[in-house]
Image (cartoon, rainbow, N blue to C red; front, side, top):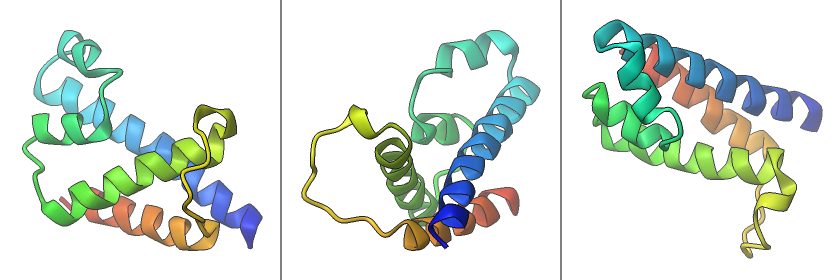
Amino acid sequence: MLKYAMITIVFTGMWLEAFLHHKIVEKYSKEKFHEYDYRPYEDKLKLLNISDTSIENNVKRFRNCRKELVHEKSYLDSGEIRIAEKEAENAYGLLQSISNM
């Protein structure tokens, strides 16, 4: 199950990046996307007028979790134990929430 949870988290990140890129370029321009390219997902969602509090909370959780799981060396022990399967559920729920907007 860990393997599938990790795959879900990684591919949700790839989907979210592609989705946000597409929507920002479609609504604004490539130049505008480049301004936001390295900003957090939350900033990109706000630019697209997606301001649902539950989505904001889930995307922040996803961003932090993904960073910790995918880039092990990018953080020091936060004292929090994450369960990959639970985080995968959050990632999939986030994907569904945003894609239905």
